[in-house]
Length: 181
Image (cartoon, rainbow, N blue to C red):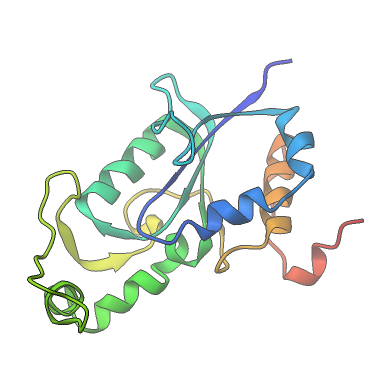
C-alpha cells in the first residue's frame, strides 16, 4: 500500500504545534503505518519534495517575506493544506506586534530592552524582510483546514489526520468531543 505523504513546516511561532503533533503519543505508530513524513523542521529534509505531497501542515504566523515564500511553496506542493494553531489561523501571539507597528517592536526588542548591550536589529537576506502586518496563513495562500488552539490539542490533530486518511473531510469540534480510550 502506498503511504500518504505529509510535509510540515513552521513559520513565526514557538513550535508548540509540532510538539502537540508529537503528543499524539503511541498513536503515532498507527499513523506511521499509513503516512510518510517527507519533510519537517525537526528532520534533515526541510522542504516538501518537488513532486508534491498529499498533506501540508503549517504552523506559525506570516511575519516576514521568508514566511510568505515558505507558505507559497507549501501550497504549490501539497494537495491539502492545513494551518494548525492560533498563529497560523489568525496571527496569534506574533500578531501582537500589529498593535505598536513593526519598527517600534523591533526597536524595543533589539535596542531598548534592558538586557541589550550594543544591540543591532537583525538584517539578513536569510531572515526575510519584516512585514508591516502579521497575519495568519490564510491571508497569503488558500488553506483547506484550520485547526486552532495554542497549541491545538493532540487529539484534534490525530482526528483530522485520521479523517483525511479515511477519505473524509474533518469537522473540527469542541475539545469534549475528542475523548479516546
